[in-house]
Amino acid sequence: MKRVLIALVALVAFSSQAAFAGAPNMLEGKTFQGEIKNAGHEKPDPDTFIFKDGNFRSTACDQYGYTSAPFHAMESPGKTGFTATTKNTHGATISWDGWMKGDELGGTAVMTDDKGKKTDMTFHGTLHR
Image 1 (cartoon, rainbow, N blue to C red):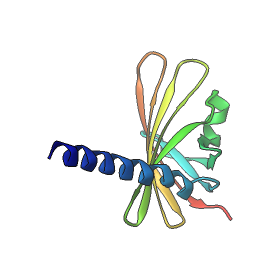
Image 2: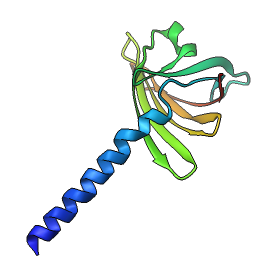
Image 3: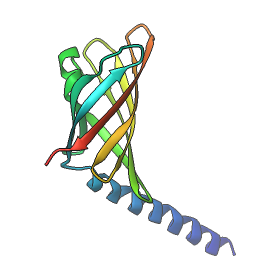
């Protein structure tokens, strides 16, 4: 019984890893044109969201010293979720939590500055062809 249980746990773990390992390909190589908006600001900023070589990049954040960072994708029925954490040279981070459904991208991001102050943001875009 113990062997069966160990085999079952190993099979579930392997299946989960296999599903997770294939998920990044749904976003890999895609670019979305859109905008990002800080909470409390009336006007959003134009942005381009790039998924390339296993990394995520927001071009609107380039001017603040943020670089690309690895992204992790999760498949669910009808949509692909992703997370990433980009960092800049001053110690600030942006934690991204988004989704892709069809040709649309959207989600939220939380910027944490080097002093710990948090700023909520929303973003969305459309697949660039």
